[in-house]
Length: 352
Image (cartoon, helix red, strand yellow):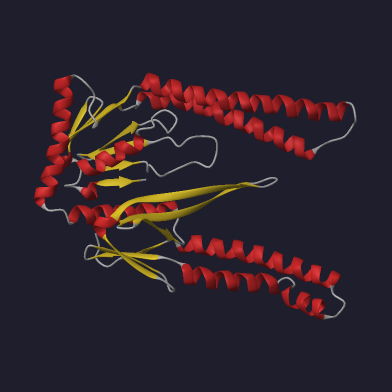
């Protein structure tokens, strides 16, 4: 890991937020000035309207939002077993060992014709007085993923050889005990293709029934309005097209499910410094890289995120399907166990 690298959110994220907040602020200023004109008996309302009228209000809003975002934009630096979280107006420092987890807070906003999701990224630290949550202003999910990889690599680099050996031995003991007792261990994950595919089909079936119901109700309402009242509703046509598009997407996902079944991992076992995926066995020493879908990745639509694992070894890439949150809820535990199992080789594990 490069020393003294400061991790920040992507500049394009900040730029988009400056534009969005600037537009909203400009609209609010213009509405307030119009309201003041209507209720004011003096000329102060007209002066305010002239100052805040487009494009002056938009420019003022963008400058103000840019200043606020600049002051709050967070930078994170990892050095000397410490995590430094700083902005222009604030600075915090934590021990690397105090880091416990991350959090992604999503909030969905639904308007008349639009739906968008805002994302807040945080780091969690264990302090004597409880869990401390630090908001990372300006960070997106991909930015958080890069930071977490750096933290994980730094934590592994500061483990002693004895501590690493204890972690590896613990994994070997758990797998051995599970084999002796004839049960699945905490490092053994079963992903039978038939079970995963059936759960995925059930979820798609519910979505398709909902979409078909919307098409039937809205389509019939629109048709009756045209035939009986001789009126045309653009909103009803818009909803009908959306529902039909949803049905087409569901049909495509049904077809894609057949392809994913062929590359299903079926079974994953983490055994010391070895990994079993299906009938394939890999040694972490000989693996070039393992790429996984991030467990923090979520879809803002009704369709779950499909998760995959890519194992790169000897110039060859093997791709495995690991279901979704609908069919394989233990995925986050799998990622956490794999991180600990690969503690000797933290650079070889990457999230997408």
